[in-house]
Length: 293
Image (cartoon, rainbow, N blue to C red; front, side, top):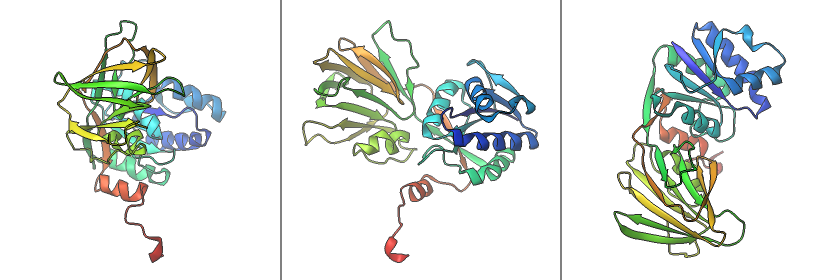
């Protein structure tokens, strides 16, 4: 078995967890390839030779693995998904961050989780991915997002107007600070923070959620994920921000966009008997009642 390891390069408290993880993988005789920037981070912060452990360095996108491990929070998981792309490699998230909807394996569950991987006692969920197509020849970034695509004002004052068409028909012109198009996976991320609904990952739809809409009657809208959206933006600054899972670029307002469901999915590893509803109960404290304590 070969595992590709990706990690958070900002949290110093995750360094010891990373070495614990690498040591455990070595004890299980698992072949490991580690992403280059994470390797350099461990070398710099830990003061010991990471090369003492047997693995290869992953320094480009040409790699293969049976499983990818994401060590960090949900942001690290999204970055891992970007590297995995259409390779179809399942990702397991190990949480060293805060909330962790995608990275839901706790530090004290690492050994159990890895043993489950070795024994093939896990399930794989396929998650929808969004694709952004821009008529801007200067833009050549990764066009995919697992959580959401956010169209936002660039400055801190005036709103923007986001014109959204579906099948040639104007759906709405959103006057707001921005607009999110989220996948079911992203329904518990940015979309939830602006009042969007929580959607189970297996749903075949997307969520349109305005950010600070100027019209109070405009509410989040769920649409089929087979629909393609044609979008244009009007802004006093003549520009706007497009963020794909937090990776942002500035576009001139003359740019027209198309957002659709990508041709590939991201595969998420879930431990056996661990469900989305368990995650909601744990992370959002569903069903918890302080009065009974």
